[in-house]
Picture: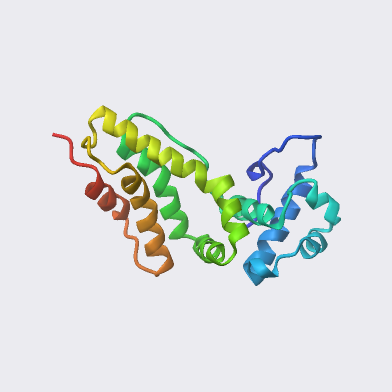
Length: 196
């Protein structure tokens, strides 16, 4: 699960060595995968990456921020927020990559991360701020626009419809339930009425 330099997001400030960033993120990901969030320390990550603690703190303000970024990059979590004017297409574009990762090599890491977030409030808070918050807001936005366009009935519960696809996907992942090739299609067929 190597982290490529192009997966590392640029941050403001003076130019940094991308190889150093990648080494830190890879070290954090390895420690997290081996020992869970409680086992991650800035000292341990610094030693494994061959850098000083100050080098890490110049890039990430906290352990939670570092671990979230390491998992996001290591599992290539997609930040695309599509808005094509077609709710089904946009939900497919957002949810299918998650299903693919949860059915692939990243499944163990991502499910472990989901469980650890429930145990560690600071990890959950950082994840909500930097990753999932924008996606939740965008999903609600897409559903609201679909109502305006007439794709969904006027009395549609925006919050519920926006939460159902990711909730069902994560439910299946965390309980080891199968996600067949048509899993997302079945979810969307339940939520979005067929067009006449």
